[in-house]
Amino acid sequence: MMHGFGWILGIEDTCVYPHAGARMQPLDEFELTEHNRRWRDDLKMARDLGADSIRYGAQWPLVHTRPGRFEWGRLEERFDFAVNDLGLQVIADLVHYGTPTWLSGSFADPDYPQVVADYAGSFAARFAGLVDAVTPLNEPVTTASFCGLRGVWPPALTGWRGWTAVTLGIARGIQSSIVAVRDANPHAQIVHVEASAIYEADTEALSEHARHLESIGMLPTDLLTGRVTPQHDEYAWLIENGASAAELDDLVRNAATFDYLGVNYYPDLTPRTLTETGGAVEQHATNQWTKGLVDSVRGFIRRYESPVIVTETSIEGSDRVRGDWVDGSIDAVRRLAAGGADVRGYTWWPMFDFIDWSYASGGRNVEEFQVEDRVVAARTSETSSKTPFLRRMGLVRLEEQVDGSLSRVPTAAAERFALQAKNSTPSGAAMEGH
Image (cartoon, rainbow, N blue to C red; front, top):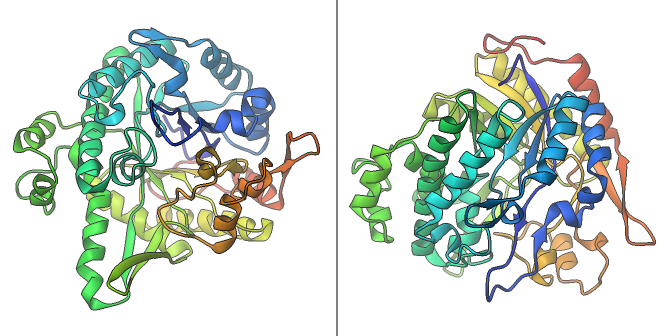
């Protein structure tokens, strides 16, 4: 997939449509950010900023309109333009937090693994030769949190038993999807993308809890790769939370492999410190700057022995802060490569700002923990304007105009990314220049 080192941009593509009884409106970032109107210009911008590849969402809820029925027209037009007109490689993001609304149990539905495999295989067959790089499901651990632990998105399960039900479904679904994709397109490359999990404890009493949460963060990938045998640290915990020995054995028998491991890391969101107040354990973001990125990449490589692509990173804040993270994170990747780490690409995600997920939940704070008061205050605003909900994480700012439309304004951080992509290829034994 990667010839040399890949400079990648991603367009936020969360696509979650409510099932019956859900407490949300459709969460369709392509629509909310007006990408559906501006997709040609957005893709051209990615090319002009120096990207050679783009992570792009297939929007499963909109494509798979009923069992066995797929509407590929919109994707065909966009992929053809990106690849044949602009020379971009597409890394297709098949599932990004949402399932078709007719699949009543969503990720926990008994039919989910087969349904998602049918979709993945149909996609791979339809776009073979045009789009050969495929991510079966973005961030299993985040999906399980929002859909199974905290009941934010369908199937809206709660608690660790809900998390386990969703995670087992996801793992089976990824296994079956990988088989279907490779059967349909022997040249396909699987990019498995997972969020980093970094926890620290402010007291010795919480250290085991922090270790447990980090271990849970690895469980979806351990499950799909067949590592969760009775000797696994979390095997008994999974059984206690509703998994059966037969289910776990089946995942071991159907162990999957991937070609690249995508690592998602945000310096202001990923590392968390556990504290205890009044008997309750709380999580607080702890910015480790590049240390967390380096530790995360090294940890994933050590655990799974796979080439790594940094598939998401960015930081929320001023243009200056974002520009500093462009330089700092790319320098960290350069140091990793120089030290022998097999890192194949770097992705800034998102290329442009996006609409906070709470916008679709009536302003209800849906984040896993409070990041900062300003953001929470914006989410509880009753204004119809999108401005209070804009997450300033892009290289390109979205600016709401008088008519409500969202203009694209490249920042100094965008210029720094373009300069890095043009003049700087990380070097090391695992990387070759273009």
